[in-house]
Image 1 (cartoon, rainbow, N blue to C red):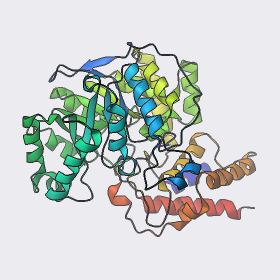
Image 2: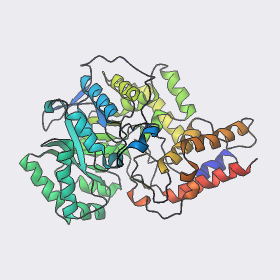
Image 3: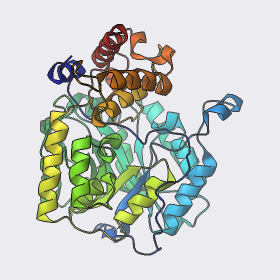
Length: 448
């Protein structure tokens, strides 16, 4: 199978997740970062200084697989490690933490609350969301809201978001018809919410509508990175690139919070050709640091959230923003070349948010896609039988897939039910991608 045929088989999209929902591991990239050097941005509306690096509590560390059988319930987060990461963050100037009722199988807010409650309240800012995607009723939304204060162990929330809205029908049903937006506005007046904003995954017309002045937003969370900046890598996700979103917010003096600066980890491990260009530009810089410098360079960005599982990820990101070194014109041009490479070698646009999980038929959807994307990005892909390295790459792909994903949780188990599709913020046609991955895998197995 030649590369052109394979890329067509894989389908459009982006992302590799090297960071999502992993077990704790030993640090291998430890950096000594002195406290007090973190870059900050001023929130003009509150006068608060917000760390440019924000801690996204979506991909928190889990206990080792061997320990999970002894757990009571579904919460497999490693609270000790979560506490350690939060302590390290605060000690080095990170002061904003973003979570949601949907993260980490519903346990992110409680884990965040436990970790933060061990610190004085004036040492941190909390960001969380009305994540009522599964039940739009007013009653369920209000229950969710009240539970957030209990789980987070706070009596006010600094930054509260209308979560993951992308079209008129969704926004109307989840927040207007049930009166929840009016309720949140009243909660802001009462002081339980300090700043009210929204997070976006959707079409350009809807973004323009939300920023038309009809609603008075204090901030907006957008997906921004050097790939999404100029290019709509997945037209099914959005019809408006990150640059235009950012420009609209800057024109209206509404600060931007940034999510997915690494596209779920893909930009932390880009295609090997892109990685060579980065190393030529700066031998000592991590691949991830380029993405963080790109996002942090923009003056209307209030903070850049990163989902950090391991201490080495956290330390590297702190190093990048302690302090921030702006990109040169030459470095911007290099990152545009890197983006073009990413477009040429198109991965499946998964950010490992886990919203598609659990699959009713047992598939480990994020890990299936992770292995697929990682193999392509590392140049370790059996896509050409005429290649002298084909046999080794074929064996590595099949063995690696079985190691990462149990055979009972692989793509061939997909029934095409489509339950996963409605919750995917990247608008991936997951059943179609599972079918393509399965077809490619079966071709490799038959090629003996």
